[in-house]
Image 1 (tube, protein in one colour):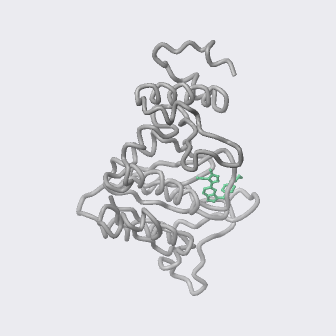
Image 2: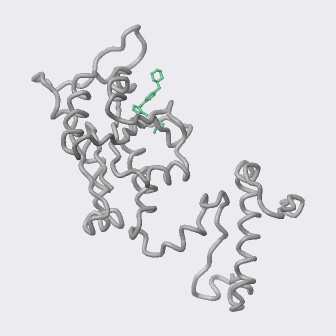
Image 3: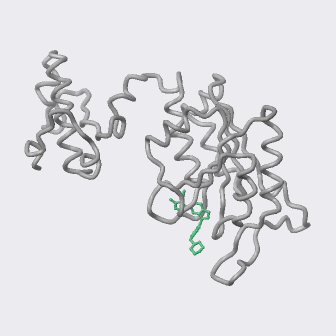
Length: 244
Ligand SMILES: N#Cc1c(-c2ccc3ccn(Cc4ccc(CN5CCOCC5)cc4)c3c2)n[nH]c1N
């Protein structure tokens, strides 16, 4: 997978070089390019924003540098390719594990990181002729800009790429895969500050352990995220059993 990120704060994306995402790049599983939007400005002040038409608080990012940046990114990719352009925004569709899985199947993701009060609407309108544009929100709160959202999305998507996560089995058991929260976990020592480990987990009975973890997962989901449970048609689930 190739990802390109256009931003006025390239240093915000430095974490992409760390940990498993950094290793994925070294292994050639992920190719990340960060572009400074100001490199595509033409005035001596290298300006990227201006006052909003119709009035209102704050500033809006001007279309010129964005158009040039998105043209340049496209020119660096394969002839005729039509990448997905992901535009983080408070007004975007909510990013979920299902969206991460959708993105993980894309060969090329381009991220446009807005700042101020957002990007001139014509940038996305113009981009739709050569990108699949997707406005995306990582949650119902307001950030300063799109960079943090890109880090969230790239980490969630990167984990799903083949070979990036050492233990791919864990993907099947973790929260939001299959729509439930994962069960609590324990490791050594067997006793810690007077607290032990559930007997079933040291029973060696793997079928019983799997059933116990499933029950704990259902109980935790019913208690913490009943909204997730409502969406699921869990086989043989007796919701009365989950009264918590
Ligand atoms: N993903 C994600 C995000 C973002 C996000 C993503 C990208 C940008 C680019 C700029 N900002 C700041 C910003 C602040 C306020 C507003 C609203 N105003 C717009 C003008 O009319 C009045 C209302 C918009 C933009 C961003 C925020 N926030 N929360 C998420 N989950």
